[in-house]
Image 1 (cartoon, rainbow, N blue to C red):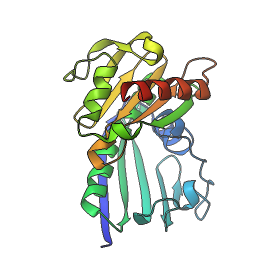
Image 2 (cartoon, helix red, strand yellow):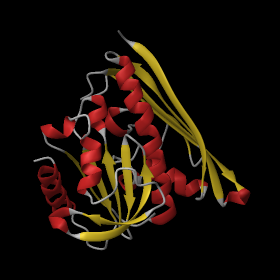
Image 3 (cartoon, rainbow, N blue to C red):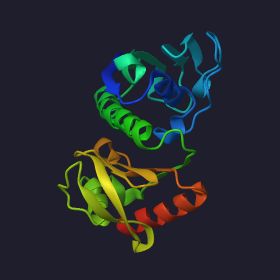
Length: 244
């Protein structure tokens, strides 16, 4: 049954209003995934065939799309961003509202979108604090069928050489592709997601097995000369080995 939804968040971030605006409009690859920049005017074209409803830089931006391409579970999607300066412009306050209509499996779809929102917005703050405006090589991958198991996120965490209950804020040594080791900080960890921040990358592990999908990994690689194809091949090998 079709039903409307709304997911709203308000938060402050240690970045200027202009930096936050850029992250939402042109820098999405640094924290979400690369998207075409919106046409800078009301009525212009936005990402995924959306229309720019509000364009007031660097204060407010809204886009809306009906019959979302490639998403059978949704018939309307709107994203609304409001950004205001704080502390003389050194920080920014953000109100983010994601709304629309889910047409099936409403509770599961809403729960997934709600929890992903917190992880994505946290990742945006990590990007703004530690990496912006460095260029990024982005890749995202799904694990094999075995990564849909109920304990799949725990399997991925152990595969990285980490304790299942490792708390956010811990500095760790991570076992990555080809058993290579690298230092990182656990910047986010709950029963659904794990976030790792190294000197040159944000590595996001998505426990989408909770919603009946495979575990996913996204890599935002800010190293000079980063190669998204090489990252994809390496982390796909890792996923396939961990869930073999």
